[in-house]
Image 1 (cartoon, rainbow, N blue to C red):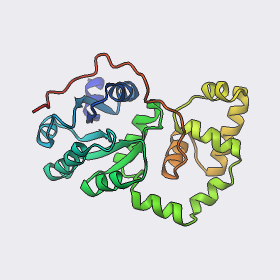
Image 2 (image 1 turned 45 degrees about the vertical axis):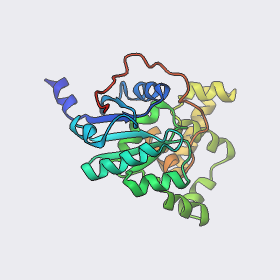
Image 3 (image 1 turned 180 degrees about the horizontal axis):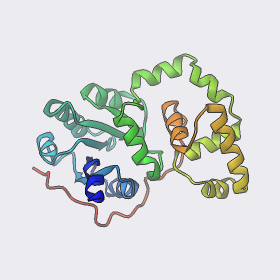
Image 4 (image 1 turned 90 degrees about the vertical axis):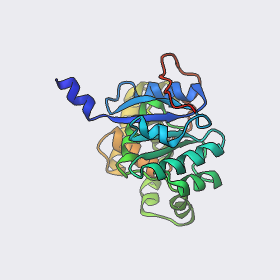
Length: 237
């Protein structure tokens, strides 16, 4: 009964992507989160907004697919079909004409492909809740004018900023230590200082802060990933 109750609280999610490596990385990131039920994936060129709605999707994660025109059309169609469906764009570029068009078409938010799959579920939850919205207009404001947030993270040392980026990408203390050739105790010391300076309590809050303020890790997690058993949704034309 408890398991059924847990499943009932899960958001139903569809991935729209034509790259099996992207699909595999997303599947890996969502596998143990308990927050999302992955209904399946669909190619933006072979599906329709109506079919995705009929599948029961509450959240749709759309890969930008090298500035795919079909993806823009699908985002607009989803907004017209059901304004309650949350559409999140997964993109390499957190600014630019294509992303502006995606937001104009009805995208709810956008997330960088630089994030580690381990951080994916948390960031989707935060975006769905409206806590993270990377609109191009907001990004321009951040670039053009100093903000209180900029003042906060300017108090971080270069090493603390570097470690925050790793934390935001989903890296563990052990992984950060190996990458930077320092001890795990040193990593813990820096992480503690980051929490104190940013007034955050844990990794989730630090990840949230880094995403909102553009301090996203530069790792490339969406490379080769296990794609076996990724569900193919019957959403093709």
